[in-house]
Amino acid sequence: MSSAALKIQTLSEEQTAAPLLDPQIAAEPELTDGFHLVIDALKLNGIETIYGVPGIPITDLGRMAQAEGIRVISFRHEQNAGNAAAIAGFLTKTPGVCLTVSAPGFLNGLTALANATTNCFPMILISGSSEREIVDLQQGDYEEMDQLAIAKPLCKAAFRVLHAEDIGIGVARAIRAAVSGRPGGVYLDLPAKLFSQVIDAAKGEASLVKVIDAAPEQIPAPSAVKRALDLLKSAKRPLIILGKGAAYAQADDEIRELVERSGIPYIPMSMAKGLLPDTHPLSAGAARSTVLKDSDVVLLLGARLNWLLSHGKGKQWGEPGSKKFIQVDIEPREMDSNVEIAAPLVGDIGSVVKTLLAGIDSSWPGVPAEWTSTINAKKDANIAKMEAKLGKNAAPMDFHGALGALREVIKERPDAILVNEGANTLDLARGVINMYQPRKRLDVGTWGVMGIGMGFAIAAAVETGKPVLAVEGDSAFGFSGMEVETICRYNLPVCIVIFNNNGIYRGTDTDPTGRDPGTTVFVPGARYDKMMEAFGGVGVNVTTPDELKRAVDAAMDSGKPTLINAEIDPEAGSESGNIGSLNPQSVVKKKK
Ligand SMILES: CC(C)(COP(=O)(O)OP(=O)(O)OC[C@H]1O[C@@H](n2cnc3c(N)ncnc32)[C@H](O)[C@@H]1OP(=O)(O)O)[C@@H](O)C(=O)NCCC(=O)NCCSC=O
Image (cartoon, rainbow, N blue to C red):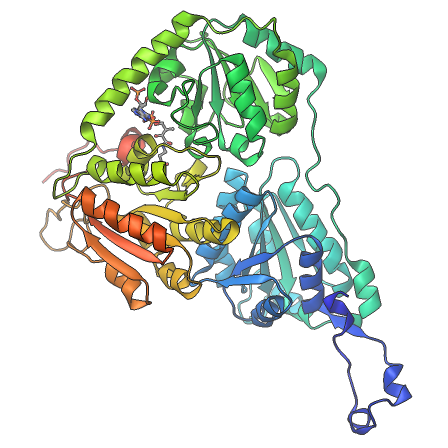
């Protein structure tokens, strides 16, 4: 029986005083209300978890959802709850739900919603909102704001439900919009009055909608597949680029087969690492510059030609006109967004890869040995260069020494989830820490946004039950650090390692006037581990890679919430990590 069925009986005083089996009461229709209908609609559509922050007007919604068996994870800030919902969507292909209060809470969640949309993560931000009548006349309601209008440009779709009988269709629209086609963020506005609207339970139940086949397969046209295969066959130096769209698709076996059967070298974008193990012989990740520059045909599989790939042009891509692109994407308008796409393949990744595989048969020409040996030579040289930097067990630690220790942790526990954010901490970890399984590396994504750390870590632990290692720059951690309390409260198997070099990029900046600290430095020698201890978790301070490895091993084995403050040399680190070239710098000297 649905939760809508028992609920509310509005009894007059005389009725309450009457005997229990009074036929007059038995004849009362069963009632339900907006609160229960929202919960029923979510449950009907397989939503098992809500990430949010309680408050007016959704406090009771959270309580009731918990009572009805939905897992409700309450955060300390909406942005972190939103990030959790977004990554839950990425991991499960079901929209992650974030629940926030009106105006300020809604705005706090909006960054995560916009980030989810940019990254193509399916997510629904449900916010309570103030009374329409007062908001529209701008009469100064509590937390007055036209939230729907504000959300619209920042997400894929935005809906408002005004009547209890429309809750079912509103939730269904939100779910379908989030996951169908290119996934993204959806906003669902639920004004406070809606929750207490009472309607007949049977009518309410009949109004619920179960979304059938929320993200239908999209099969590419045979002519488009032939065009792509012909181009791929003609290549002398082919390359596959795996993006996080490929990781999202959960077509892991087919993608692996495509790479292995075609013999084409591949590079993974950051969150596609582990789709095939980074140690795979066809991985060209350690020869990135070479393959981007020298390849002649590039198959983009769920990867977009945005800033992370230098928009598909310029020095990094070799001689102008030297490249032909095949692009696989579910969104037709992605094609030609930066350069000409010679063979657009529009469809869902799973369906497209299956059709490509059908064309890779015994007549497949294979990949010229000259190309693979060029790649292997570059790979070996870069790997040897990298190895020389790892394994230094000195204090103070540099980034490579510390990351060398963490590389071993993931090698020994390939099913653990790695969350990673920072500048140097992100860029260097991406290269050093090999991944072995799909969707195990979660990071700053398309925007390079800081602040995803604790939200991602919490959702990863909740959704997968696997141990999570969050490798955080000290600055990046600060954006969501208060959620260590949430991690302790829910006793989640999350181990946070903070690369603490006393500042952003480095810890050595100074104020030329001598008045204040430099703009990029933090309190020197801060002990982030004490934050975790304050909430009953395990805090450890380490100064060498050996100590770091021991502490992380203990945390991953015990599953206890742990925060390890890893003291990194304040001199270590470079400006903006390795994307410093994007950071404008003044060349004009100020006149005295
Ligand atoms: C833009 C990028 C996709 C591309 O960066 P690149 O430096 O060109 O590539 P990377 O993959 O990091 O590789 C750097 C070099 O290391 C080599 N490389 C990669 N993996 C390995 C391994 N395992 N061993 C040895 N060498 C390796 C790779 O071939 C490159 O060398 P060569 O082939 O010799 O070139 C990436 O930097 C990125 O994802 N950046 C996002 C950064 C971000 O969002 N920051 C948040 C902003 S924080 C605000 O400050």
